[in-house]
Length: 340
Image (cartoon, rainbow, N blue to C red):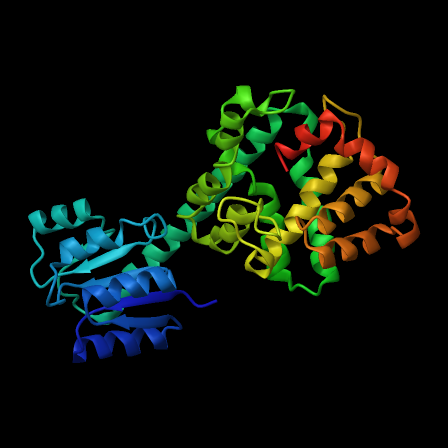
């Protein structure tokens, strides 16, 4: 993909020259002629870099730079603030407003290009390093609970397998894998006393746990490399009937990758030993998935597809009624529900 640059400047020959020059260097260039358009375009497009000329008639360049950097999605986007006069005081004000660089008039377009390229390389490096830190943080959260060790890796295997069966492309499968590793990153804000509790959670504790998808989205939002999985992180606890959280989405409002992740998450949790129950067999776990699809919690089509991949027959599914009754009537169902 070509890096995208948002060029904020009033219509002028200077803007036309910059746009043509950058496009010839294989950049995708979008333009905004005023502050309102710049804020809208930045939120919509999430560019890799913003070149902000101090020409917007209704707002000062420093203030516009500050507003562009306010949102969590924008805070890591480098902004070059370009002003007619550029002394030490102007550079300081620009940095305080969030600009990565403050320029005066470039001696040539080529000089500007070299600085643009340097900023983009630096930002890619920062993004990669931050992504590595976030992944390490997710691993540390899972490592706190020895019982759940390897859960996210196993989830990823199941989710990617289902995604492949549905014809997802390589990029989507890679996003699915990363989403599985980071889906519970928001639990960094959940106290260990709740995460490690061996029995059912009370109402207040459950409400704290239910904040983790929103917190996880907030943690990952500044990283451009993770933008594609933000809806998966936020919505992996929604239910098809609208009874899930945090937004009460229903049916196909829930992103496909989130619906796939749910199935992989529940399945691996069920076939793994927990302090309050022994691991269920794959057959028993699939029967529970099927039942929860019929309740309107999981995507029935995806559950059926997942069952086919696991080799579950219709006859086996029908034979699980007695097991389902004993499972949903026991404390372990409440314990599992706390973290699905």
